[in-house]
Length: 381
Image: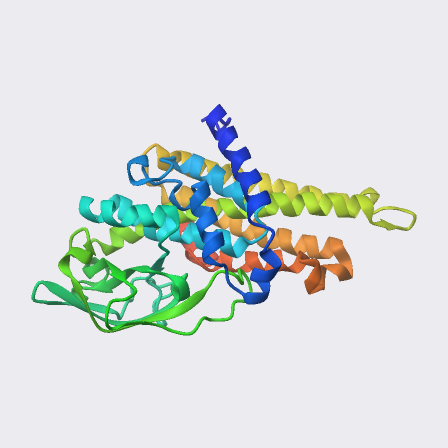
């Protein structure tokens, strides 16, 4: 197993870092104040190739494997101070676009993917419901056959990108009697009669990533809107989660890298008791622990991507990586605040924002408790 970057991967990472630093940070204070990203920033993500990183080149993407995609996401997030924008872009790519790449028919791919890749179209994944969060397959939204199509009814909650999305990947029960085997996936246009989006929710973290509920009130879609066969929804969703739980969480590696750089600069410059904080052993040890957690999480995530690229479906490795990254991000956020002292809890400093961005990582893509259960089961417990 060799994680040494190829020449192409090094160039990709360098370009992602430079592009994000120079093109996406200028209007960040305004986006924070408005609590949303704009179409211009979304288009820039498309211009670089982030929105189609793992999409085959024939549909306009970069055609990257999982490990290369993770490397690009990591450096993009390291350079872009707007973690909410990067999160939305990754949710778009990994939970909405990749299911289309892997499960849509060729006509749908040719028609839909170029706009999603270029940034002309925004996608959203709609699966979570009020009573189907951690118990993700306990869906109440239904898709009832009616002639040559389906009628969708139900409400989805906490849908990332919903306020600005043009297309929704919707999971619904086509055969309620079959439980999770009776779930199917549908691609639904925002303008479809019967589909309505609620008011944006106020995020505590990832504030520029818009979130809202989506309601389907006798929303009629054609049979061609279904991805795969009836009952394939669970397989489609699980495949998308393998992408999301690896490549999306690479963004937090980039954030932690930038956070560590800023912490090191601070403890070198800040003086207490007539010497830099960095010369206090307790401070140096805390910084060392931040570095250790980052590198351990990075190796687990790279290995998970490598396994995915080999064509293996290892839930154990994916859960280990996701859990390690999310919990490292939260602890590093706490450490950064502690090392900045009072300034760490002043909102204008931005130090506390990275902790607020990190906390959701232990909740979405299955909670830390769910992943510990998955790991325990794979160990035979």
